[in-house]
Length: 229
Image (cartoon, rainbow, N blue to C red; front, side):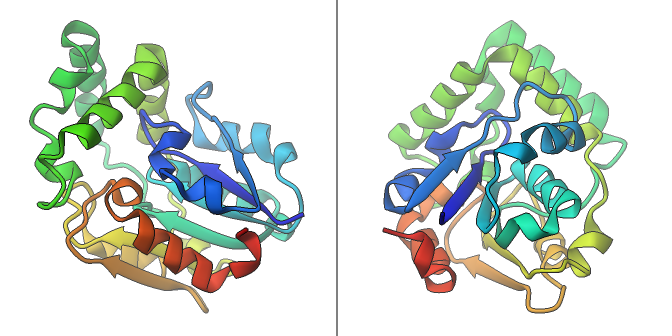
C-alpha cells in the first residue's frame, strides 16, 4: 500500500495541502490537535501508519513526523518537511504563544492574523483574499481549545536537530524564500543529513502548499512518483 501520511500545522487541517491529496494514491490525513505534546501525539497516532508510507508534514506537524520516524524508522520510506524544521522553541516564545491564544479568544482569529500576513505569505500572495479567508476558516474550524493545545505543543517541542542529521532515511525539506516565520538556517539544519535535501521555492512564504501547489506537487512527485495516481 503506497500510503502518504499528511500532518498539517498549527490551526490547519488537511485543506492546507490544497489539491495535493487528490493526486496521491492513498492519502491519510492525521489530526494530532487533541494532544498538547508532539511526542505523545506521535506515539498515539503511529499505529495508523502502514509500513512503507511516506510522510509529508507542514510546519508544526514536522515535529510529530520526526518523532514518528524516531519511534519506528522502518515504517517510513520517505520524509518531507514543508515549512518545517527540527529546532526546539525558544523559551522566550512561551509567553508570546500563550498571549496569542488569549488574543484569539478575545478578538477572534481574523484579529490574530491581522499583522501576520507579511510573515506568513510571500509578496505575491499576501493580499489574496481567498487565501486569507481559507487560513482564517481553518483556524476557526480548529477552535480555541485546539489552538491552546498546539501552543503548548510548540512550546514543548523537542530538539530533533541531531536526529534529523543522523536520520536513517533522508529528510527532504521544502520551504519558501519569503518565509517570515522561520529563517533559512533552520531549514538547512533539518536537511543536513546523508542524502537529505533542501529546496527553496521562490516568491513563496510559510504557507507554501497553498501558495505554490503545483511546484510542491512536482517536487514530491519527482522523488516519490509511485505514491501518486
